Image (tube, rainbow, N blue to C red; front, top):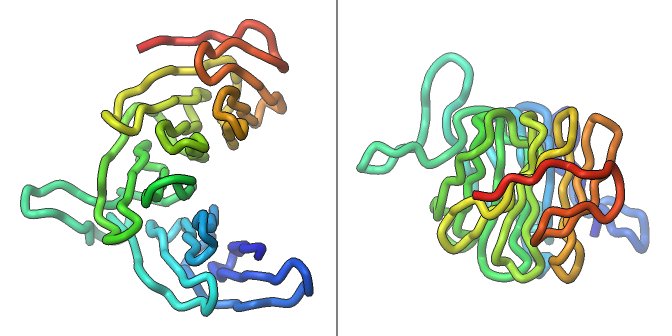
Length: 220
């Protein structure tokens, strides 16, 4: 199955063997920035400039849940807990990824925060704040123990999921980081940027395996 999101806010899935559309639904009220499929292929998630992420049945296209915070438009319609904490994003949702192991979904947005959602009850498990600009990409390690995020601040942050702390800050790009992904064994990490450079580094030491030499690595 191939899943895509459109500028018009539609979510579409295709059968890659037959090239036929499986479903085509009106998903969001603004541009869809990212889509992701769960490890078992049963659900998919979409992230949009309408300040929400949505959860869909990958089989039928039925909307299963809507994860939202502030509207970012005429007023605040944030979801709040009894303790007053905002549980969703405060602006556009720009990235989304499922954890390969365990029931977690990660979203990032223009509010500079990565949110980890429980993929069973869709409550917020943790908020990761460390970037100074929009987060454009999130990616889990294959073992589900770490997550990486990249964005406007030209940095890649690698987080420990058990405590929410930053393990490493990888610098070296000279423009926003648009994509980040771990190798299948989780030992290497690749980041792509609008500076037209791909950096391939050790996910442990941060040392470069290919790309621009000697990027700056900050340890916590």
